[in-house]
Length: 137
Image (cartoon, rainbow, N blue to C red; front, top):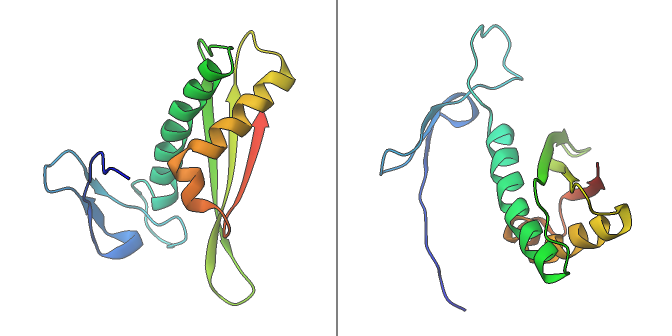
C-alpha cells in the first residue's frame, strides 16, 4: 500500500464550534441544527460529509463508467446524509447516493454505481455500520 497524501483538520467546540485546517484552506463556523435558538447557522458535519462523499463517489463513478465502457458525460451525484439516533442513545449515519448518468440506460447505470461503490474510499470506510443506498435518478 502507498499513501498518496494526508490531510488535517482541527475541530474546536464540537458540533456547534468550528473547523480549521493548518493551511487555511478551510475555516468554517459550524451550526448544529439540533441546537435551539440559534438564528444563523453554518454547515453541520453531515452537510460537509455529504459534499465530500458525493465528490469522492463521483470520482469513483467516473472511473467505473470508463472501465465498463460507458463514459459518464454530464453526470451528477447527490448525497443525502442523515444523522440517526439508535435505540441505545448512540448515533449513526444513513446515506443515499443518487446518480444521474445521461445517455446510459438504467441497468448499466446501476452496474456503474455498484462498481463505484466497491472502489470509493468513503464507501469502503462506511461498510458494516452505515446504511448506504445507491439510486439511479
